[in-house]
Amino acid sequence: MLVVMCGRFSLTVRGRVRIAEVEEQVVEIDVPAPRYNVAPGQSVTVIRRGRSGVEGALLRWGLIPSWARDPKVAFQCTNARAETVATRPAFREAFRQRRCAVPVDGFFEWERSGKQPLPWRFVRSDRSVFLLAGLWETWRPPGEQAEVETFTLITTSANADMAPVHDRMPVLLDPRALRTWLDAESNRTSLEGVMQPSPAASLVRHRVSTRVNNARNEDPVCIEPFEESTLAEGFLPLG
Image 1: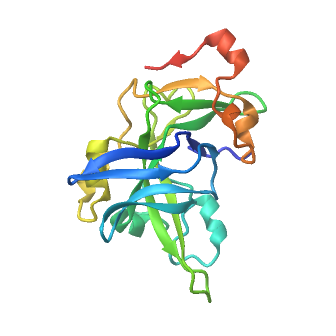
Image 2: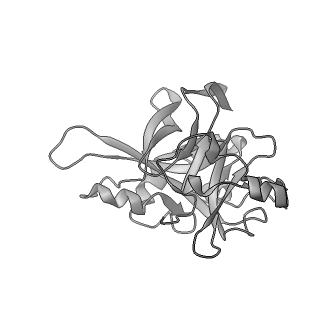
């Protein structure tokens, strides 16, 4: 398994989910089925600004720049570093004009220990849905008319919650910052203020089974506390 920072996440609720309120518009998405182990190359609903306001759209994880000739570049663009996202060619146009937010209720990170990376799941203490900062892009395969819409997640340096496991973390969007993040007119200084590590004690973690390491596994076992670690350590709050 190739371990990528923020290489998996989950959204295990079902039905109509309220995300935030932007400019007096209530932002909601429909979740037809729980997702326990979303991996790069799979499609999920993201929040972005459309012609009629803020909307949900089904996009594929792994950004393909509009100028790319080979779609395989997507697997090198599942994450974008906050420190270079404004200048790196693969991301800079999307950062200027096409920012999005990805609703999740948890994400996975792997602790590099021994031969096999050990997965942890990070969630809010109240298990609520939260938002990860992302970018989206439209790509048209050479010689074809159909367009492909893709996205990437932005990462930043780890806060106290993440540091024991990894030195990076996804950018967690405060719902109050969603308007700024989605607004195409927001200046770089404002956006850099959004792309900061979240405060300590924003997240809690628990060990999960290495079953989550295989993207083909998509079931509740992927998010359950791993029994042996649970007996030994319990559910571990951070910060």
